[in-house]
Length: 415
Image (cartoon, rainbow, N blue to C red; front, side, top):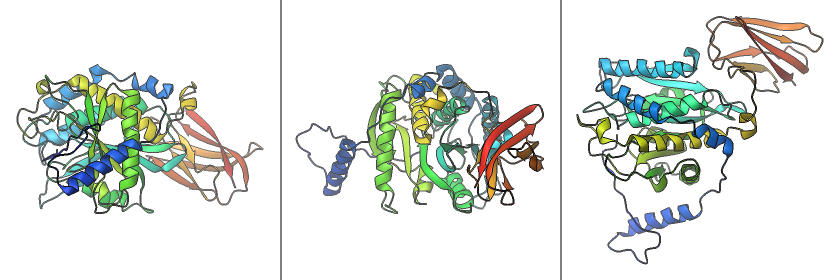
């Protein structure tokens, strides 16, 4: 949802600017400078191979199903039904209930509970640093098929295709509620989760998708890429511009869309912006006239455009989370994304359950002589469990996770 949008359309090759106030001239000059200094990136075939698996059928199906769930307001059955629908989607992609968290809250004195849905995929090199890919699933005035079923559909397709791909950084796919009433869901998440984590959650980038479905009957060949220009605070504006330039390059590399550079406002990334996080985002360039009305339907959208936005989202998420092309090219035995970190270890080993179907498991550490030196059992394990190893001698060990018929082994080093 966005209540207004003011754009200055200024061709780079235009010889003069007319009737623009001084501040707007400065804004334009900053925009042009940012475009001219964009980050250089190269095409990665491994990323393209994943992007090319994006399904138009999946996008259209998600939009149709989202529309059929009705208007998704606080305290309504359709809001809960949409949450249940989202969870079933992620489960069908191979994510587990252990990887899902519900962030519950109320606002404005109401007793109605709203929930954010967070799906976490742990990275292999920087497991405690997160790329957040987010968009709201609540609606106002109607079903919200464009605002913001379109963003939801793109996020779901990205999550589906990245489920089994190792990335250096962890990824959180977040579906916020409460956005249409004033960003309440994202505000609650920032205050009660991001800032309540000890130490505070380390966020690499927040990538927000809001209203990316296009307009039926128009030429929808450009996606608006948004960066932070807010002065309160302004400390991350330069980094946001750099990351948004990288986003624009990903659009060009992995989709047929053109890009238009603009500024971030009035959507869930602003809750992170005010918390001094780095943000970027997508928004449709041809803006629908149907948002917040009973006619925000698929028939007034361009599902092919939504599909192309999803392709750009997939490529950008692979880039931001840094999927290793060499790793992607290797066919491996499925270890369900189970990982042990940090590695080497000093005091505490963290066990990431990944997408292992069972949440009950035994974990043991075996030394180079084949002797078991540690054995712990977890029942209804959390996504991340910790094991103290400071009592063990320095050296190379084998970590063994046993869950039902699944046995996963990893080399670990204690130093």
